[in-house]
Every structure is written in C-alpha cells, then in structure tokens.
Image (cartoon, rainbow, N blue to C red; front, side, top):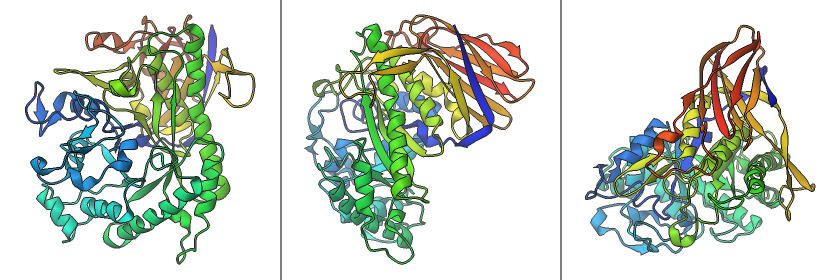
Length: 513
C-alpha cells in the first residue's frame, strides 16, 4: 500500500520550541514519591534523595521543561510547607490524590521547591511552577517568585539561603493556577479572568522591579467552545496601565486534553482506530485557542501551551494512583500528537505529556529497585532531532480508516476519517529530519518521502515497534523489545526516498540536502 509524504522545504512554518517535548510531574500516585524521590535510605541509588536511575533516563531524553507541582494538587499546595529543614516540614492533606508507595491522601512535604529545582538541575531541564489560585492568594504567589528569583536581601531570600540555596534559581515559567474551571476552584471564565489579572499584575510588577524581566506567565484556558473567548474578552475589560494592555500580563494560554478508547491492553480494532480519532482533537484544541487569541488579542505573541495531555485509560483510577499499562498503541498516539504539534510550531510554545513517572502516559516506570523506559519514551527519543529545528510544511497523501461518530465526539459530521499515516518534518544545518508513523494495524505501507532538493542523502533511518503487537506493553523485563532498529531506505527518484514501514510502527529519517 503506497503513501506519499511531501516535505515542502520552501514553506517553513517556524522554529519548533524544544518545550513542546516537555513533561509534567504531580504529587499523585507514585510519580513523585517512589518515582522521582525516595529519600536517603532506599534500595536504589540516590543523589540527595532523588532516584538516579530515573534521572539518568530523563537526562538522556534531553527533557526540556518539567511542570510541577500540579495539576489539581497545585491549587491546594502552599509552597512554604515544602522548604526549610525536612524534619520540620508539616504533614498536610492531599485531598486530590493518594500517593507514594502506601497510596495515602497525605503530603509529607519531603519533596518541595528545593528538591524539585535540584531535580531540574540534575536533568538539565527548565522548571515550570504552577502557583496556587484555588486556595491561595497573590501574596503567596509573589513570595514564591521572590524566593526563587530575587538576588537581594529580604525575608524570602534569607529563607532560600536557610533552605540551602544562596543564589536565585531563575525560574522563567509560572502557571497562574491549574484547571481553574474545574478542580482549581470551579471559576467561570469571567471569575478566573479577575483572578488571573490580579495575580498577574503582582507577579509581573515583581519581575519588572525586582527581577530581570524574564518571567513568563501561563493563563489557564479550556477546551470548551467559548471558554477561552469569554475569558479573553472579560480580561480586556480592564483599565490599561501606561502604554501596556491587559494582554501584556499573559505570555501563554494553556489547554488540557486526555483521551481513551477501550482499555489499556484490551481493545477492539474499532477502538484501536478510535483512539487516533480522539488524539486528533488536540490539534483542534490548539487551533481553537489560537483562533480565540487572534480574534481577541490580535498582534500579540501569546503562545498556546498543551500542558497536560495523553492517554487516560479506564484502568487508571483514583485507588491505584492513575497507573495503567503502556502499549505500542499509546506510543503511536503520542507520535501522532507530536506531529500535529510540530505542524503548529508557529503557535505552540510548550506541551507537557502527563505524567513523567508511573502515572498515566508516563515515559518512565519504576519498581522498588529499577527504572525503565516506556514505549512512549522511545518515541520522544526518536523525535529529539525536531527539537529547536525549523518545522516544514508536510503533506500526507494516505488512505484513511473510517470511525463512526459516537455522541458529540469529533465535532460535526457522522464519521471521522483517521489517516493511516502521520508525519512531520524539520530542517537544521542542511539536514531534514522526517518522522513517519504507520498506524495501520494490519499492513505494512510503502511510503515515498519527497523533498524540494535534488540528490538527497540518507544519513540514518530507524524504526520503532517492528514486529510488536499493538497491545505489547512495558513491564521492566522486556525493555529491549522497544529499542529502535535500522530500516532500509531506497532511492525512488532524485528528490524522493522510499521506506517500507511495518504495521503500527514509527520511522525516523535523517536526510542530507
């Protein structure tokens, strides 16, 4: 079965922000306690309580940004509980999630700001902090910014020094709440707009006067049709200050999207393809958010962030800390999402898959003694050459699988046509990198990749999941099965190459031009 992928080198989109390949860690299940942090006395090697096997995997992935502490947890988290001597930190409620190996709804505060920022330093990633809007106040938020970023002599900087850091941490990304339309306070768009500009006014003023002007604020958006428009419209009903407008308070607008079809390992063929139809909704979410910004904040450079996304199977429930098996199907869906985000490099400034370790569509799993990469981890590893490169317009001519509409899913129409091939391409320093996914469950596909350049050279070609069933999942004992292997590539013309992609596989091609 033939498919054509046209890479338009003369139609660049924009630089692919490395932060599109970002991650998210919440105090939920075994993500932090057991996955990232185990303390000083444990069965695995640690560096100041942080698991070294987990950090080694994340460092190898070149993780660009890590969002913390939530999630729903963020809007009932008071950051001062998690600084200072660890033995003196209060034990608090975690009313959203049971966590740790014992899965109790409590927070020890053993892992706080300093531990998180130390983790970020170990894996060379940018921190992204979410402040408490639901049960906090602007003063608490600005105090946290002062603690992290100010280099003077104040109560907050003395507290930072007492907690082990003389120098400021220089945190750039600050989320003003999380899902404030839901667990973060159940605000209406208008009520959240009031809260956002209240918080953002003080955070931006702090950064302008006491910082270096580098802080970037993320407003919480929504995937509901008119939520973002109502939020942006009401936000504008504010007296301008000097030459600035209210939109100068905001650098990014975020949306969240989870999806599933069938179970984690038990699904029908229809459910297999339905998952990809639902995956495509992330692209629609980004487009709608971008359209709202263009309509109500024209001329601004506000980016769209998808700071929670991924597969959330029915097996991942409150009682088990939102854990699920991680299959080839899940990894393929991640590849499709990353292709869609690459194609929107001109509007997407960050994305954070949920979550980093053990929870939902994680990239790393752990037990008492080991850590291992999931199939989705290998997709992220294969896609690394896209990070920071220039996205190129990519057109795919492929067969589709028809998925019937159920309820209100997929928007208008009775069916959704799922493309059986997904692709994206980027260019840097005379190299074009192309990722191609054959989501056809049953058949290999001959894929012709065409460029605008003559005399294309094939530098490397690799494939993931060749020969694996779509329900194969990682269990710590089969990690070698998910490793990439080389795949042959033929010249099919002066400006094209041909590769035969196995069923349910992801291919990465590095081409010189």
